[in-house]
Image (cartoon, rainbow, N blue to C red; front, side):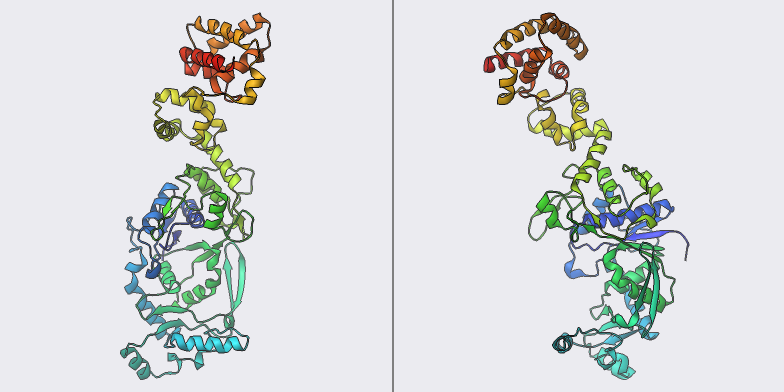
Length: 505
């Protein structure tokens, strides 16, 4: 077995990938890259009844969009494939058989009816039935059958499952890399099903066999698998294999902190819980994704990294390479992490400010074209650079800058009352004369001509600049008035002032 760090992300293709799953993939990726190791994607599709055809492509596309691609997996075959469990099913029977032969597993022939009856008997006594060390010797299984009896039942093709034979009366001690040392009494465990007569293994057997054969060194997964850890450690022991190191990640909690984050929380509060849009093949409903909501991948990665991990410093903005450098599994918290939509938007705003201008132009262009607006990339760049500090998403650009592209058709009532006085028309008429004489209509030139004129008039700046802003924007908002005037150009600027005089004078 090699000593190289090898980790895996092993989702089930039963629907869209939740951001909790993306975070698990991210932590695996960061750990692998920090230790110059391999990040493997394995598709755990043993439960064919819940399999959704489009889900595997969705998982791969999500990882690629988040910039955390796998090194080995479906379509990137390494030396440890195939990487879909459904294509590995011939392997598992051999290992199930090995456990039976070495006395660590047994055939159980109990019918569902027999087990349901037992549960009812126990419930009537106020107890819970468990198929395990204390009950298995009285049940319908191979532990008290001869080899001939067992073979006869198998020849008759009776339904069976193969159960793990949990050791009796043992204290099991093991370490989790996040939670520290854990002790479990084996008598409190049940004999989990490892293999079914339909030829498919359960998660427990397939997962252990695959991790061993793929030489996985560290298993980093969600805390929902913590109750299965004693069984998984016992399985490694039963096979005589070296156990990998385990780390169980905390839950991502609802914004209230009460319970696990779900799609319903996102629907209720208007934020995505999936990386990409997902159209449900059964209902036809589309669940929104971070990509389509115009979040940047850097935002999602930075936000997810902090849901459960802390670098121990004041730094909050981490590019992916910096996360790789800083990430330590020992700094992952045990407690669940509350999802915070406002913090997510804060991350988005920081990355928006840093995003390449070409990317922002390309994202804004379709919004403008939809409104029938055609402007040069240079003009659009100028506008974006002016308003992007206040934007969280590219979709905010229009609301922040529409007056750079079209004239106001009306005027804010409150602002009009405040800014447009009896003498405003006269001042605006004089301002038009000043503007008409400016040859170079640049922002600096406008300031150089208009400001001295206002001073010479002996009126306050607000008397001219407020109605000018109102004329250009339709309200008391927007960036520097001279920037807007220069951008829309001399003719358009004068036209807007004249329209305001007509409407408000």
